[in-house]
Image (cartoon, rainbow, N blue to C red):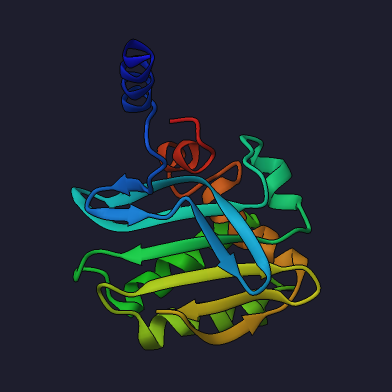
Amino acid sequence: MKRYMTAFLLLLCLIPAAQAKRVLDIKVPDSQTYGDTQLVLNGAGVRSKFIYDVYIIALYTQSQSKDAQALITADEPMAMRIYIISDLVTGERFADYTHEGFVRSTDGDLKNIQKEVDTLVNSFRNNLEKDDVYDLVYQPGTGVEIFRNGKQEDVAPGLEFKQALFGIWLGDKPVNSGLRDELLGKE
């Protein structure tokens, strides 16, 4: 009996404990609950600009997927969590980079979502600071809810806007292809 107990304890030590993923010094949770919806971590990574790490981003979905196009087009709850980790990132710069991302994601066709793009970009421009955590949460029928440090700031309605937003990181012309792979769990 003692031998079985020793073997059992050894097996327990070999099973990895479920933990949050660590990206740089940030613990990214394995799941997030938004309203009544629990989402699981699909992937996470760091965005660097030149030699500087500027933000960490995590993608949360209902079920993990490596199919970028399916995630972009899906009309189901999902979220991006952005951790601002550099004081080199100003609200103005992040707003400009985000706007450029929308232009790239939509091949420059913002006419149907310009108001929603402005809503998100202005949220960054007016408020963003180092150590902020933004949650961009898509809820079908509602749109993308914009949270800063857990407090809802605004809503940008529409599936088309959500598709362009998620296309910034997951689309054919992502902000960074390595980061795209990390968000898709392909690292």
